Amino acid sequence: MGRRSTRNRGGGLRRFLHNNGLTLLMFGLFLAALIPMSITGHRSHNDDLKDHDRPEIGYVAYLGSGNFVEGVFENWESEFLQMGVYVLATAYVFQRGSPESKPLDQETPQDVDPRRQRYADRPWPVRRGGAWLKLYMNSLGLALAALFILSFVLHAVGGTRDYNESQREHGGSTVSVFGFVRTSEFWYQSFQNWQSEFLSVGALAVLGIYLRQHGSPESKPVAAPHAATGTD
Image 1 (cartoon, rainbow, N blue to C red):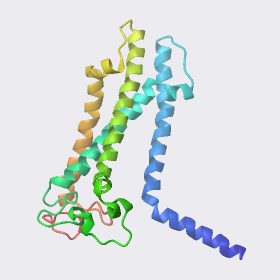
Image 2 (tube, rainbow, N blue to C red):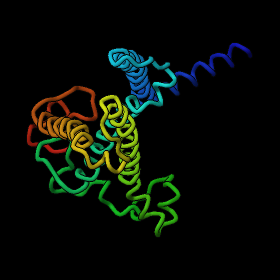
Image 3 (cartoon, rainbow, N blue to C red):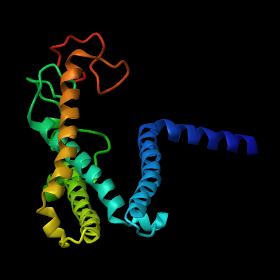
Image 4 (cartoon, helix red, strand yellow):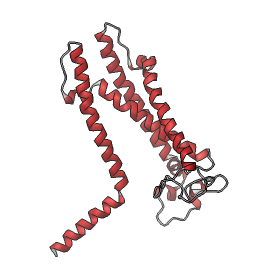
C-alpha cells in the first residue's frame, strides 16, 4: 500500500512537470539570470562607490537601490511592451508566409464570437457574457499593458534614485520622478531596449517564413511551403 502511494506521488510529480515544463523552465531561467545579475551588479556598484571614496553597501541594501531597481525594470518595461504590441498587432495585421501571423483569408478560432463556440468547459466570463465577457476578450492585452505601465513607473522611480545619487556626487541638482522622466537619459534607456525588442520580433516573423524548427509550435511544419501562413 505504501509503495503504491509513493508511485502515485511520483507519477503525479512527473505529470505536473510534464504539464508545466515550459513555465517552470522559463521562470527557472529567469531566476538563473536575475540572481547573478544582482550579485554582479552589487559588486560593480560597490566598485563604483569605492572609486568615488564612498562606503560600500550590503547586498540587501543594493536590492533596494536605484541602480538595481532601474536595471531590472527598464528591461521588464521593454519586454512587456514588446509582448503587448505583439499580441495586439497579430490580432489585426498579417505577414504572408510567417508562422507568427494568422492565415490571410480565413477565419480562425480566435476570431469567432466566443458565444458561438461550444467548448465543454468554457471560462465563466464567457458563460456570463456582457461586460465581463468584453473585459475577458481583451484581458491578455490589458494585463500586458498593466505590467508595462508598472515596469515603466518602477523604472522611472529607480532611475530617479540612481540619477540623483550621481548628481549629488558631482555637485549637480537633483530632480523629481517627473523631472527624470523628462530627461534624455530616461528616454535613452527606454529606447535602447525598445528598439532591440521590436527588431527581435520582426526578425522572428520574417525568418519563420523561410526557416523551420522541428517540433516547435512557433515554427511551420518543416515540409510546409514558404507561402503558407500560420502554423497549421
